[in-house]
Length: 317
Image (tube, one colour):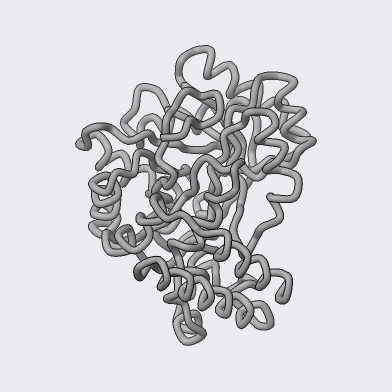
């Protein structure tokens, strides 16, 4: 298994994402979720060899961490659990940004309690907002690492100048950027920077939040729950939607040539083909969804596959 930057942690190429299993009823939810299916998804990912789980306090305003905290203690070997800080919520479950020291310390304590962990494997700053408080937030995480409360620290959604500001205080060990064939911008500068500086990269939303799974259709999108944030996203609307679904069809055709692999597996394998990427976070809401994408860990795209995908991107920017 590859090493996650300089952390010394070995991880499988695919990790289980828990954004959707946080459930609905909050600002960036994916609609209602069956907790039993969430628990089954975590167990199935473990059975299939996935060695790490990505979560965050904001996912379901604490609920995703609670579910992970229920299941993980019973798994052997124990998977690594990576979480985040900086997003807080009010009584109406509306999300706000906070990088103040007292707030981050309170978040870490709450995550330790929900995850039933004495120390957290990896804590990442979820968003670099407010920008003026990046130094205070990063200094706080470095102090928590020195105290042994957190083993490793990283960032998510940071640009290069923001990572350099953080690095002036303490090393940035990991980066979690959005990276997919839907949102590929990280490949231009951010991923090369991370590779050059030994920063471990775990990419999120490699399947475009479901658009590249091969199972998304205009009718299914029209039937998404009212509290599913994707209903408002421009990639799920025309004119981008037709382009994105055509891309999913191409990925499905490539998957067929690889023994019936899914479009989602091909999408994840494409993300993993970038040498700067250590692992990809694959969300799943059931054991069946885990089975449909976990094979990306062993899928290697051919030069011809990559040329076809590149040609599509050129023709359909």
